[in-house]
Length: 293
Image 1: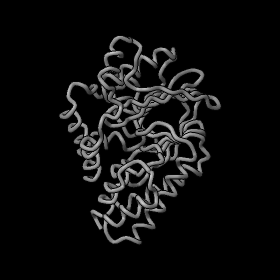
Image 2: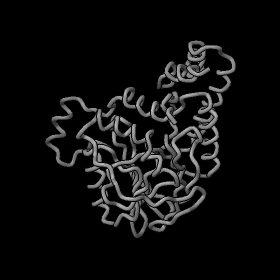
Image 3: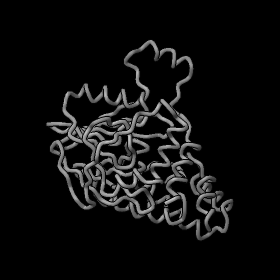
Image 4: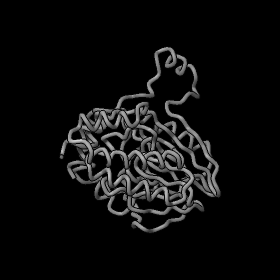
C-alpha cells in the first residue's frame, strides 16, 4: 500500500502547471469575467451528452458531467477552489439537477452533493495511504484547495450497473496496480479509468514498476474490447480508439525491451529509438521500471 502514497507524493513533486498563462494573457483574463482557468468540451452521444472539463491544475486532473434527459451525473469534482467554482458555474448553466457525484479516483469539492464510490473506496480514502496523500496536498497547496466532503458515500459493488438520469454506469475493477477504484463504462459508449490513453511516453506515476506494465496492458485490452467510442480518465481528458491502440502497442514494446536490455540506460535509449518523436520522459520511466529489478 505504501507504493500508492509514494506515487501520489511524486505527482506533487514532478507535475508542473503546464496551463499557466503568460503575464500578458493573465492581464487580459482579469478584464474578461467569462474567461476560464480550465477548458470545457462537450460531446453528443446516443442518449446523453458528455461534458469534459480539463482543469489545467498542477495534477492535470479532469472532471466530467454526464447529462441525461432528466438530470446530471458529475464525476471527479475538482480539488482546487478556482476549478470547483467554474465547474459549479458551468453546471448551473445546464439547468438540471445533480443526481449523484461519482468519486472514483479523485476526491474533490463536491460539498453536500450525494456521493457515490466503488465498493471499498470510502475506507481507502479514510485510510493512511489516501489520507496521507491528501494531507500532503493540503500542506503544499493550503487554502487554494477546497474543503473535502464528509458525507457518507453510497458504495457500488464491482460488476454492478447503476442507472442515473437515464444513463447506465457499469462499475468494473480497474487496473490491478492502481488504487482500488473502478473502470466505469458509461452508456456503453464511454470508458472511464484513472489515466486517459495518450500518444506519449507513459509517466512513471502511472506505470511505476514491471508488474504495472502487465496490469495496464490488461486494462487497456479490456477497454478496447468494450466497444466504447471514447476513453476518458481522471488525468488527461478524452481520447479515442487510436490512442488506446497506440498505448497497447507501446506497452508491448516496453515488455519486449525489458527482456532485451539489462539496465535502465540501455532500455531508455532503445525506447527512444523505437519512438524518436514521442513526447514524455522515457528516462524517468526507465528508472522506475529498473528500480526494483
